[in-house]
Length: 183
Image (cartoon, rainbow, N blue to C red; front, side):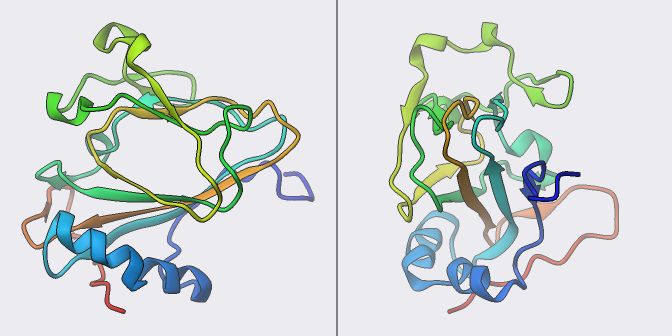
């Protein structure tokens, strides 16, 4: 482990972090979440994602819902960069409208699960550069990924995923608690 924390790429379970709790439950975010998942919204997960300067690795094209034991596959995530997300430091890439295709096959790579390129048109990938503090809301079946960070700047972000009253846990019991989110 590096002393500067540069090898830490993901930190889960951030609901009880004071700073991020305020973001997760902010009215600016919840206004959109309520419209997307219904009332009352609950938090599925909150995760910090780090791509250190010059070494942050690629995240292959994937959908989130096939990883998650939740039905129906219709959660929504809010992705907020803490640094400008650029083409050089690994901004998100998406395939617009891909969530309408349902769950696509994923294959395991060295340390990841990705959708093989034969299941989507690589020419349809759209980079989504974003200013720090802006937000992207996306469906849990949207095909998305990110390039490696080849810049001298970090790319740090938080993703918060929400579910609504019609979602249910389908994994091995016992079911985890998904806390309601309120202001």
